[in-house]
Length: 213
Ligand SMILES: N[C@@H](CCC(=O)N[C@@H](CS)C(=O)NCC(=O)O)C(=O)O
Image (cartoon, rainbow, N blue to C red; front, side, top):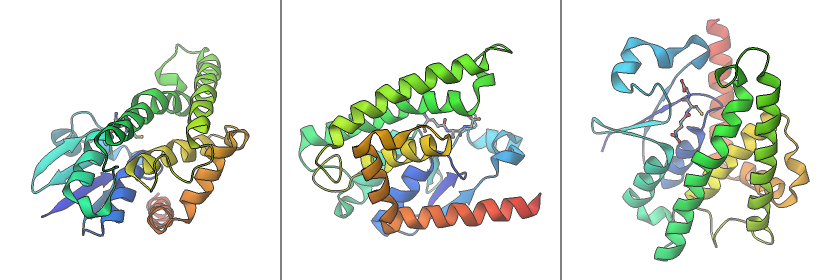
């Protein structure tokens, strides 16, 4: 099986990169330079008109949307136990990832690029509102993580997905540490070999892109 993951540093493509790495399966990472708008080129738009990552290509078939990609990885490599075995818990994990994707990520996007969401002059207010939504989201996750190492009884794709949300929040200097269980989960995840590997890969790619100018 030929697996390619289209990825860009700092983006949510980090989550499927981590879960694919957890499977031990070989895959190719196609690293894109967003600062050079490589995702807006005619070549990439022909593959993915949504101009987003992650994009998974498996034997020439394309799959977009992080949640679908995470489920594909978990179901294709069941030995990695990337979703809980119990059917209800499995749906809870999918629910958590859907929330990361549709309930948390959009607020992070507003902090990253407020100008895309507001008229000139209103950017600061978009960021303030997004930060408040994020504070509420991290408070909810904090309750779910209290007294636990992971969202379920072992590491799952939901942990990888939420890790990305936390990471992006810290990159925007949002006060994650006030949510003590989220913060502890974030630190724990950073120690995981798959996560350490993606962070090292990201650093390498950013340095390479900087050299290219
Ligand atoms: N709902 C999508 C969101 C993907 C997404 O927004 N990716 C961002 C990076 S975190 C992106 O590629 N943005 C580039 C753009 O929108 O042009 C998913 O979960 O896969």
